[in-house]
Amino acid sequence: MYLLPLSNSKITCWFIRKTVMRLIALLFIVTATFSLHGQRIIDTLETEEGTMLMYENRTWTYLEDLNFDGILNESLHEAIIADTNLNYTQSWDHDICYTSQLSNDVNKLKDTLWLCVQDSLNDAFVMPFDGPVTSHFGWRNGRNHNGTDIDLKTGDTVRAAWSGKIRYAKYNTSGFGNLVVVRHYNGLETFYAHLSKHFTVPNQIVKAGDPIGLGGNTGHSRGSHLHFEVRFYDIPLNPAKVIDFKNKIVKDENLLVHRGLFRRGSSSSSFASSASGDKRYHRVRSGDTLSSIARRNRTSVSRICQLNRIRPTTVLQIGRNIRVR
Image (cartoon, rainbow, N blue to C red; front, side, top):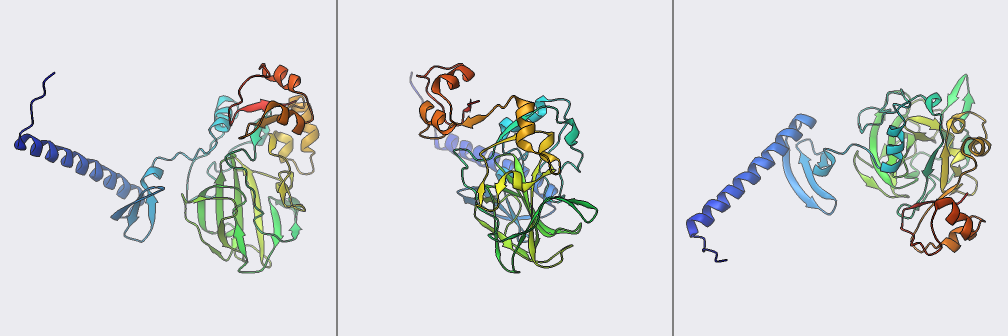
């Protein structure tokens, strides 16, 4: 096939047309962003994380975040929406503390859901602050205390427990004081309350152990401490059922979510056994083999193959959930 050379005039028209289309696209983005944030964009900056839009009030956001729906654990969310009885909601909102308006009813949770607290991609955990626990989850002063209080001094550094994305970071007038909320890749959210100062902004990506603020005594607080909460779709659960505060580690990389997990004083292990037939799963990490998984979970390769309908020669894909019991 023979191609005719383009004349200078055709090249010029093509360049002008392409430039105009880019300007129209940028104008659309600017218009949409202006109406969303109420601030005029004064500059854009290309970064490794994406296109940063900077506003006249010195705030910023990433272009890629404008349409972010807040879902960081797609497999878990698919299981949630597949159960039409739940009707659980979880949006991405920087201005409200609970995105469901506390409408997610734990009593509708009839089945047991499996949640991988730590997987091969996000396997780090860091204590928010290495201090003594002064108050536990449960009934206190005529109402439920929805978190674990950790003693600290004003100005001590508070860190993200797991990797994730900042959803909320500002002063909360309902009692939390300066509050940071992190949504994690495992499907949980953590609350860090009574801070004297926060370092983060909404949509910011953080890794486990990253500083997110300084401890304090703001809001409804009597003395400096960190009020730390763990929530599943806005429903508070006892942090001590996920975290071993004495040894400062995650109790188990697998978390079976059921109604009993959210009850004061309930035994999550006994309820999980009866509700799920003592099922247990393992998410495949880099370097895992069937023999190493079997050894770690005190079972046999043949039993794992039987439970998952696979062969001993099956190639394990990283991220796959393997039933081990």
